[in-house]
Length: 151
Image 1 (spheres, rainbow, N blue to C red):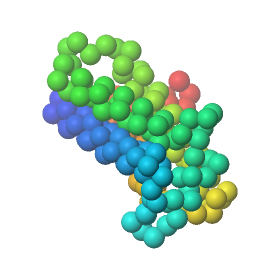
Image 2: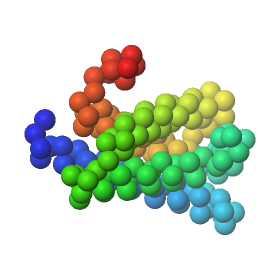
Image 3: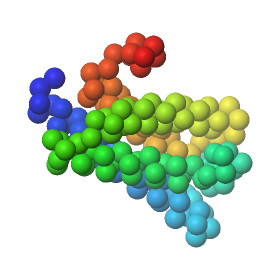
Image 4: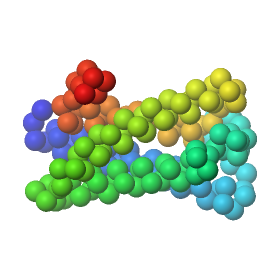
């Protein structure tokens, strides 16, 4: 991968994470104001985001999303504009967080499909964003799938 494609990948991750932050923030604001959350694809988002599964260890999932997407956005913004002073631990943290977010989004999609038996366009969009960020992170850091599984 050339230097320019690394920058393109970093910018792509930054944009995806920013979009994810805005999706999570939108859901957070609707819930905080107790407004009905409408799904663009005629799913039942309101029921899903107010279900028993909308919290993880007592923390609303949309807040976890805002933290993840916000950290990822800021981390890649820093990497793009100050690559020489980018701390190495942020690379490892970004890799680990993208993997955890991807696995967590799979868990949430399982809950949607098999436990709640409902859909949520905002939740599916967030899962797609997590998946794309994870794939681009694997590409950016030249990780093989085996190294993610076996260390």
